[in-house]
Length: 229
Image (cartoon, rainbow, N blue to C red; front, side, top):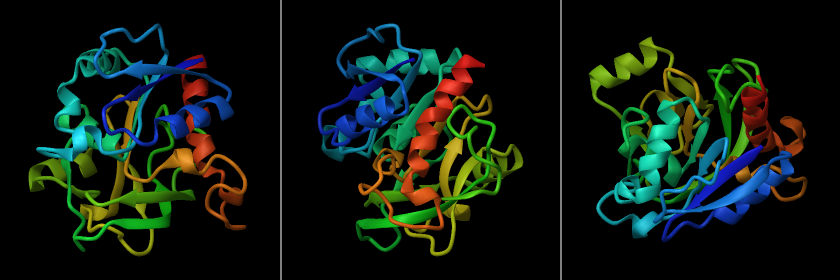
């Protein structure tokens, strides 16, 4: 499957995301923020970094870039779209996902291997997991605290839009321990931790409890199964 990975000015993890796509058995297609051509891809990844230097708000300027017009249209047609960290922020700014991401409650940049609980195992990016399964994914962010109005939060919980929750210590103060969301259709998923950093032995979390640190690879493999189905 052809999976597009979008690069914006300030993107840091596009090469890592492309490698994760290839390791999952797909063809990685580099997409540029200033173009409208999705090059016939069947899924899209918005990788992490500091697009446009995080000026204004994280992901706010990137959400208005030319490529995002096409990403939003494709997402609304049902194409699988994954937003990782800064990409999650873009999805929220583009209103493909509810709520927003702001500075961590501690005011500090957080870097750790984080245990997550999979709340939704029926999305395009989580279908290789079981609901309630715990996985380990590295995270690195300074503005990863999920916030929403009381009305938005009630809708998110009521409609089952939480894809992942933090287990144990909440690393950034996110409401309801929310680490990732999905849209109603299940084709769009955003999460703050970085699954592209948990796809190879020796280069991700080291744990005997969680599949030898390869949980991130399952997220990228999930998209292939969703499209094939």
